[in-house]
Length: 106
Length: 120
Image 1 (cartoon, chains in turn orange, red):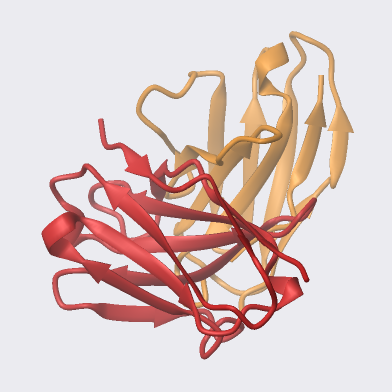
Image 2 (cartoon, one colour):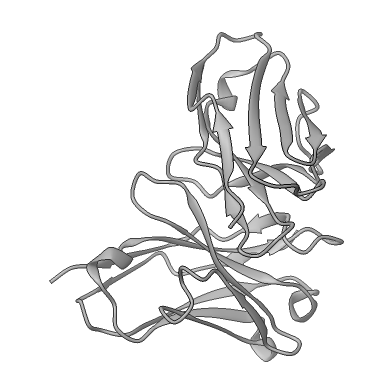
């Protein structure tokens, strides 16, 4: 199975900050990498797909980059509603796997 | 907009069987891979398996193969996740999700989840 390692596991930011989190795959996943945001008690929400494509309706302050094994999610001008857990997810190879998440506190 | 409906909760005893549903309003239901994702209490997301309703082709995470069965009825645009003998360790939230058009597993529509509680 492809292991997805996210860092940091948690971080704290202030409104307006720029936040960066990373995801590393244990082997090449090309650009088959998604980012999801989940708030407590809610379903996950797709933010970024195919490593760098912003999901329709997603705020433009979110951006993704990377390919192969190293990926980054950046939030510019972080807002209070951005709190929650962010998961990366590879779908290059079955079984599809998620990282353990980065918990963002605002 | 695609709506995905799931029952809110199921309470079962160990050893009982269960089949939970996932109804999609999407027009592409038959021709997309419908996924099931588990989230145990306080934990992360785990992909369990997916089904392609057009031909009932399935993919399973080896962790869950043999433990659950994924099925679908395209006539009612509904996918199912089934257990024959539940364990306490099956207590979790179970989400179904449908993929973004043009992708196999960028899940842009998620159901609200079914909370399965298994306790004697």
